Figure 1 (cartoon, helix red, strand yellow):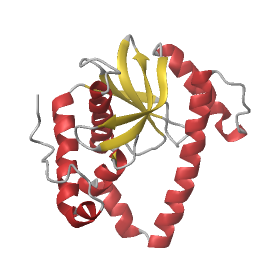
Figure 2: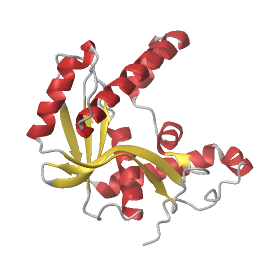
Figure 3: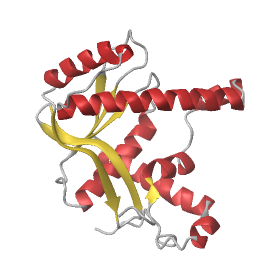
Length: 212
């Protein structure tokens, strides 16, 4: 169960540095415009995720006209990388560190098992995407869903229709995990009293003091 666990995305948003490109965007735009943009992007991203999931589960569904071209490209992409889903929209929980999150896919890509996440964006925030995947991978290993050699893959589905779908494979597991755990410790420091008020039991356990 996820009750009492911190969200992976909340940990990263609260505990990790914001990319400079995103900080510049915030400086240039009003709060109202930023909120409107985020809402619209979230709605489109959710719909794109639904299209992708339906393609993977081979459900019969009507693809909205604005997504048909990208859906066809995604179908061709899955064939080109031999994508074979094992678990779709899997909730992952770390009882060791007190967090939870939902990965888009655990499956085989290019012949290797990996934790996979889709990103419908033109902006590749490699550091935050890497931390998110590292958190999911650690939890999946802890839950016994994958082996220690499981990979991490971020699939970018660009908003810009002129750009092609592509994926990034992360190799440096240790540094990605350390970055996420550092963000977790930073969030605990910044929000100590709020977490203490809800009796979050991992509060006084430094995440980076890892137990083998």
